[in-house]
Image (cartoon, rainbow, N blue to C red; front, side, top):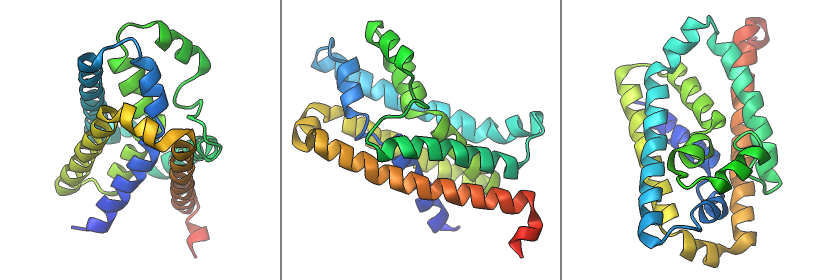
Length: 210
C-alpha cells in the first residue's frame, strides 16, 4: 500500500472542500436555525457529502467508460476545472464553480439547506468529484478504493467538526484568518491542478514524456 498516495488524496480533498472557507456560508445558510438544528444540519450535510463522494468513488470509473472518456482527457479537464476554482480561492473567494450568485439567492430562501446547497455543490462540488474520479482511475484496486473511501469518511468528520464549531471558529479566525486559509488551500489546489494537467497531457501525447 502506498500511504503517500492516500495522504496526497486526503490533503487534496481537504484543500478543495476547504471547510474553514465555508464557515461564513454555513453560518449564513443556517442563521435561521437554533443550535440543535444547526448541529443536525452540520451532521447531515457532512454525511450526505460523504455518500455522494462514495458513490462517485464506486461508479465514476464506469461513468467514464460509458461516455468513452479517456483518463488522460479527464485529467486535463479536471485540472482546468481545479485551476479555475484555485484562482478564485487565491483571491479569497468561494468560487462560482461551486455556487453561482443565483444559487446563493435561492439558498437564502430555502428552509432546508442540508442537501442543496451544503452537501452539493458546496462540499461535494465539481472539483471534489473530479479529484475522486481521477485518483480512482489511477488507483482502482479494492484496497485502494477502500483507503480512498476511508479518507473521504475522515474528511466528512473534519467538515462536521468544523461546522459544529462554526460560531467559535468564525469569531476566532475572523475574516482575515478565513481568507488566509482559503488562499493557502487555493495554492495547494493550483499545484494539484498543474499535476493533473501534466499527467493528462503526457497520457494524450506520450512522446512528450520522453
